[in-house]
Length: 574
Image (cartoon, rainbow, N blue to C red; front, side, top):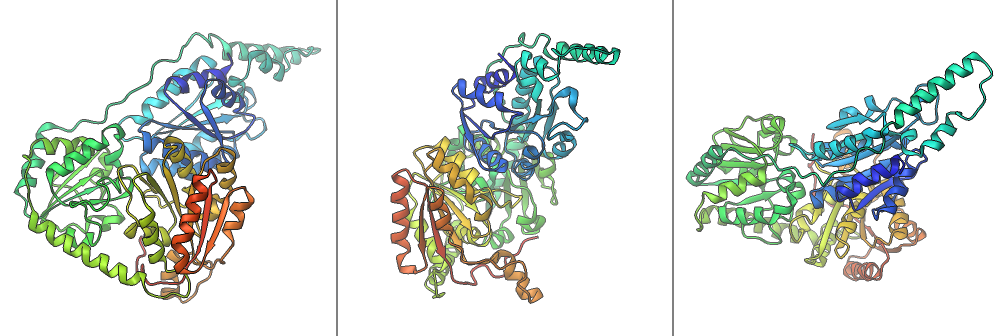
């Protein structure tokens, strides 16, 4: 076996089902080795998409997703996606090719110093210099990616470690004659170098799958949190993405929240955790609720800009924070009780201290009344004429099309933020968005990973017309790999999230103007199905047509031409 086979052996042993990539000569042996071992190799049209897809696999399975990219520009193209995974705390394994070990720094193809570039954006990075270290390095990568606060890791595998030894010796000119003393000295050095690089290369065998337990909470702190919760009159629980990292036990988290019985707000990957229209799930006016609450539990949620750096929570409230990250635990607002542990385990521990029963009914009713009033307001806004399709109305129609089998991917600014108020995921791990980094371009990669993990799911991408430009070419990937997803582009010919404030404050729309581009024709050109709708009365029928195309095996895109609304006026975040 060559080094590419050894890499594939580790991935197989760790239960990796998919390897996402964009091909390159530096990593070809890895791709071939994976295919030969039954690992499905999914090649994309941009390296960032490959990492986004691996990120989605990690979020939906709880096991590291894996991407492999070639050297130089192959790696640099992944930086945004890797940083997004780091901030979203997703366990992603990135394998990068590199120039031959003996030629690095001498002008080899695509040779750059990769470690200083990638190191700030990963938990751990390792340069492999000998074949025998490939397996230990990759196994360590799987362990580190999952430990504590999960995150991406990077393993650099130079091309001469991956090919057969005879081929590498030929590359280094070991068969050429040596006429001069300098030639003989160089040949002797290269022979020593290759011997050392391949020595004992096959003595190490890939071990079993690495399982890492989530950080356990202190039992005394859990009991203290439960006691303070029970003493509260107006408690709130905020559940964020980190709380659903323990994917195998996500349903136990739902049971725990129901047993506790306090009103819950959900964010990020936790959206949909309690299903649709759950009595404990509040969706609107969170800021007002936080200012009224006397007890707040942040479950895997940092006090960052989304909570106005902790200022949304009133100072007299008793604040409990459960977080795997010590930094996030104390960010901007030090909690009265900080539990450095997995948020899901913490909530499940609190629930074990609470007897089953109805509590805080008046408080829940107050919040529910406020939610109902906001929903009624949204319904009225959906009826407002805009000259084209009203974005609020479109989102209502999408919400009506959601089934128990739907999985939603959000990739956009203004349109996706509008959808987040209206479109309800049907259950746990049925919503994917970039996370705190606010990255555009995740849509195709996330949908690709989601459809592979859940091949029977009805996967939807909600695109803004700005964000769709980043990954529209991946419709080619969808077609080639038989990935049937449905995409809706909210096309208002603008970077509206920016334009809303820029025009009002600076009186200029420079840089924010797009066109009502025929995105449906682009998707059709790649072999998908394309639909265009600009009449609000035809939205429902168009959604049905797109779903029918997807059910027949074709990826479909709906180009929805939107009119302007004031739904999100004044919503800029910093």
